[in-house]
Length: 175
Image (tube, rainbow, N blue to C red; front, side):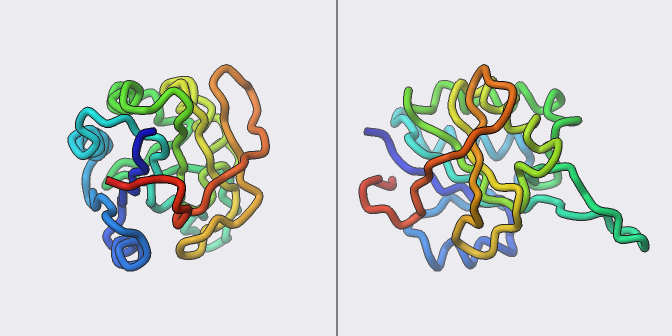
């Protein structure tokens, strides 16, 4: 069995994660490439069973009309990955592919990653990583998932319901 990696991208959420999870990997402020290079260095030769990416997602437009935002995404440092920009980051995302166990998965623990076109982003990630990618279309307060959690599976064209493991599940070992 591989390891669980809790990787943080967001200085303002680092304290919360560090106070609740043993041995998180703080990659706050790192670009997409630096983030996944950091995950690779941390894992070394050990396969990853679960990678939890603790980050932010932009959840609304900052306009005076309070326009609803329907574009799920994740932030890795200054980089915002969404359905429109994922191609730009594909080479960096591929860094993760050989690190994941055969039955491993990735959790996008940022707000509204699966919202609207975020489903397309997650499906593309699943195809790149050849593993399930989990996320929610709702805001994620602090350390728990706000259901429903959805899964992108390689080769599928829509998200499906996901089973998930909470961060404190003792069945998984951390490095």
